[in-house]
Image 1 (cartoon, rainbow, N blue to C red):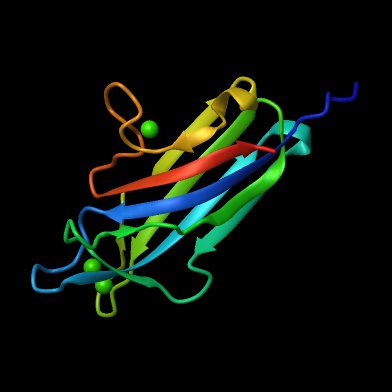
Image 2 (spheres, rainbow, N blue to C red):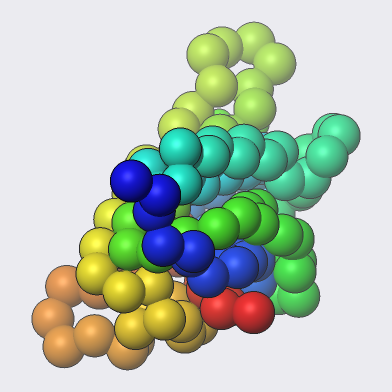
Length: 146
Ligand SMILES: [Ca+2]
Ligand SMILES: [Ca+2]
Ligand SMILES: [Ca+2]
């Protein structure tokens, strides 16, 4: 049986904020690379993996005034979705003389009609523990149904 046609969905990383730069106290900025993995089981399945930035890294402070990268606006998924979408983000802080440090892994699964999840997903929009508000970083992304 043919599956019914899904919606054309786009997921865009809007911003990240670093709460702990994972560096010794005397070092103001950490060197960060983010990796998105967004996938659906619908319509035969599709996985999209994205490195942000495309090459190199971002130098980011954890000083409250300078710790946010806004307007990243990087598309991390485009595909056909009906009722299943998983969004994963990992952040890595690069170190030259020791193993890299990892930010808390982010994972969120959306089930049910995808149009019900079209929104900017970010901290501060949920009652209690907000998944986008993690121990050492925060992020905001947008799910759009086109
Ligand atoms: Ca480090
Ligand atoms: Ca470093
Ligand atoms: Ca949220």
